[in-house]
Length: 89
Image 1 (cartoon, rainbow, N blue to C red):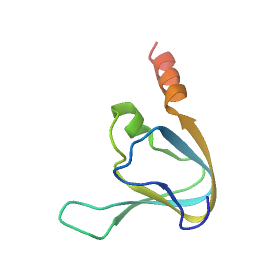
Image 2: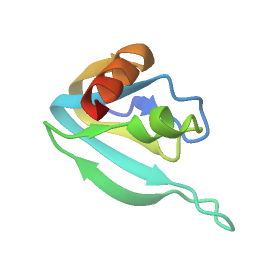
Image 3: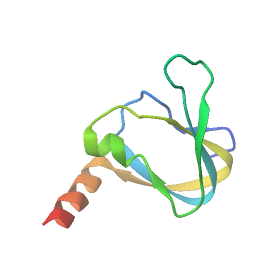
Image 4: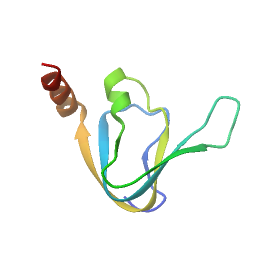
């Protein structure tokens, strides 16, 4: 992931979650009645995101953009669902 590249875009369908391995990301959201995105969070290595879209089968709630060159680990929906079901048992 290169600086400025979007990992996920608000409103898109969520089919995986991510864990930041190296680099830095920023989370932004455009709230109703505004046109400019508001900064919500900065991600550092070890933090994960994107699981809400998988848990609730909902569109992405925010946009995540690389603020420096970054590497990510990606977990697809099927694997995520399997892990959650096993943990619940």
